[in-house]
Image (tube, rainbow, N blue to C red; front, side, top):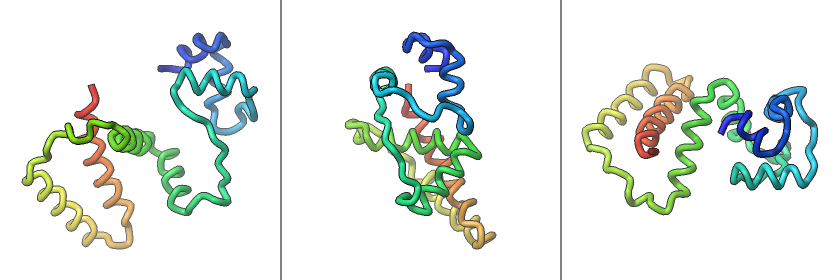
Length: 136
């Protein structure tokens, strides 16, 4: 669903959704009724995040997603697959693919051991590619 569709379903102007999704300088708060309507339409739950309680890893992941939306997409695919009751229907990954993946991870981690993010990016990209094939 895009922002225009959401605005239409909420009965609001498109400019409202633009302000709502703006990461800085956007809306500071919304009414409970509107929040509940958005939650129902998008099948999500809002919650308040206390950054002082979030882990360093969570903050790093958040920053990485802000820089590259593909990381967020990979995380969403992973979470949706883990929440899917049909995880047992996942196709088998050929052993050769797993071996090649392992070799790539080992090679990259030895080439630049001070940059573990590169290994993580390769792993997330590889996983995202396979998960994307599972979605219709």
